[in-house]
Image (cartoon, rainbow, N blue to C red; front, side, top):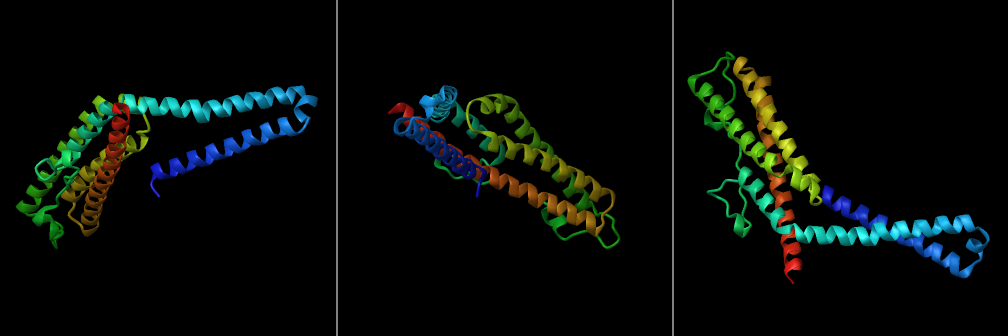
Length: 228
């Protein structure tokens, strides 16, 4: 179950529970004399009903209208994040085709560490290329975050996107550290740590693309609603 699905289920459960409380209070008020005998509890009950209706009805309406109003800018922000992590040559963002850029251990590193723990020229070149790729990918994410974090944090339910991006940035740091450690000592354990870090980073990127794809669909629905 994705965090977005869990949040929607929780919202539905909360709404249902709140409506049940309101129905029970109204029924007691109409069918019995409890609230007439207990004036203080009657006032508290009225306040609870007002609060629940405000949260469930007015809050939802405001959130929906806000999502529709900011949908075009939300789409721009999401598209920019996609450009930061997808292969622009292989992807067609306008058509919904997203191919993530992946970190590459290259053929030289794919064979694993040397028996003596040293490095060939091919190893060193591949490690340098990997570190340069990490720096490039992290800079692209940081640039997009610096422009859009404040807006996304204040304009909708975008916490999952920001959390995914932060996880990728942290994982890129781990890839860089693992590459440096493997370069210092080309042991089997360091190689396994580097390969695991790279695979995890690529998996995080794929997960972020899936989240952005779903959010694009939702944003387009909000845009269509605002235009109708």
